[in-house]
Length: 89
Image 1 (cartoon, helix red, strand yellow):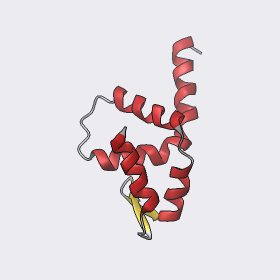
Image 2: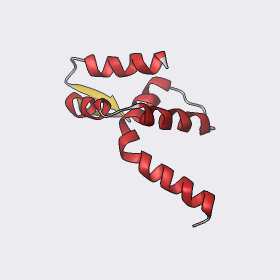
Image 3: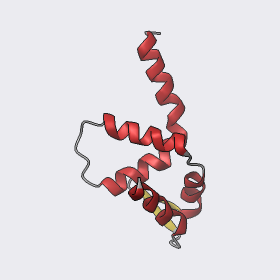
């Protein structure tokens, strides 16, 4: 958890004009806005995705940055798919 906290702080305190997310340079203000929205629910979601991942992660920092950035946009669909899988709907 400490590493995730440090990673989030690095993003929020960055003075660079762009930050690399998923191989793309995005405006730092856009990335920071998404990171400011993160709460414990999003972090639990990202940790759950990490636990369920079966492939080797070569660049964990880049993977985590992308996962954290995308969490607010993907969390609802992830849990909806899980419920549909569990109940067969």
